[in-house]
Amino acid sequence: MKYKNNKTGLTYIPISAHDATLNGMEYTVVSLFSGAGGLDIGLEQAGFRTVVCIENDINCRTTLRHNRPEWLLFDNPVKIKGGRMQERQPGDIREIEVDELLEFSGLQRGKVALVVGGAPCQPFSNIGKKQGENDEKNGDLFLEFVRMVKGIEPEAFIFENVAGITQSKHSNVLQYMFDQFKGSGYGLSYSLLNAANYGVPQRRERFILIGIKGTESPAFPLPTHMKDDKAWDIFTSELTPRPEITPEKWVTVKQTFDNLPSDYTKRKDYAVMGVSPIVKERMTYIEQGKNFKVLPDKLRPDCWKTGKHQGNDTFGRLIADFPSVTIRTAAYNCAKGMYIHPFEDRGLNTIEMAALQNFPFDWEFKTFGRANVTLVSGGKQIGNAVPPGLAKALGLALRKQISANLELRKKQDSLVEAY
Image 1: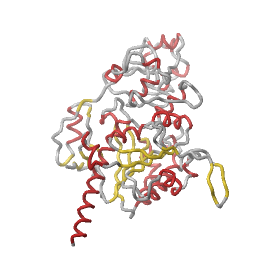
Image 2: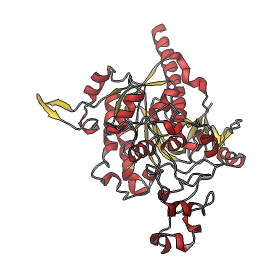
Image 3: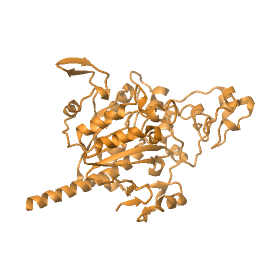
Image 4: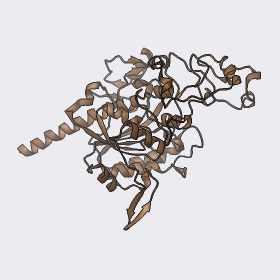
């Protein structure tokens, strides 16, 4: 059963844990821009197996090797070109050829289930310079994703990025991707998905582009969670047919923190930002859902007194009975957003950040060359990740559709043989 939105034309497919075992087959994944593994963890939970990863950040590679040593990491610092050996930055996708990646991983062109990844999102983010494809460092990496997909020819692919990539000034990026895949046999669909609608305790919107061979309009996972009954009624009012399903309520910050073991501060990837007495005093004035704007002038820094700073969540306190705001790379710093602990006068620590990002508790973050994770490294790895819960939902929806396609091909092949 699929449900079509009459306004947007998008289709949705219901998902369940059973979908992770469809066909009993092992579906392989090539992971690009793997980061700290959030997307791959979710796909693993959906019944996929990541075979090989490409990641240029050494701390992320250290985290991946520690947690999943069986996932191959392509970070060869040299390549042979024109009969000569050349140095390259480990994990730099621009310098990796499709053929050498396939040979390294033991995979075959056309025999891979999924190619997944999100090019670094900073060029398209609503925060910062927003240079998009004109960003000299990372703005062209979506081209590398396209190159890899076209070379590997997987059954399906997932391209993930920030919501800002949908802005009109970046329209040529999406148009390029659609033009490149035109006539390739992939049906394409894209949408903004809210991670909270898939059991993640965080209101994080991400751009998702999916492509599936032989499927005209690939379907997104039907939400499994929703804010309330009214929100569900609004969402389903445009769907045909209307789902006879009752989603669960959003997962809250309090529920998430209550599930953390009491001794988690002993972990080597625990880190928290220290605060001065004046900053702690400021926190005592901030109620849940409020921010720096409630502070008396005597406690405001000069930049908060002028009125020029208009951040809506700067130095805000999280609401306990609601999913968190987007966990960004510096979510340990209360001056960067609504990141004050809901009950305590302090910022979030790395374990809490990872929990709000929906990472399994046994996933450990590492910093290369150090016994303990650094706050900056841990924050960057956690904040840049795809929440595994969102990735799992996508994986279940894609596995369901890939499995249906494979079954259809088997039937068609049988008919041909019989004829």
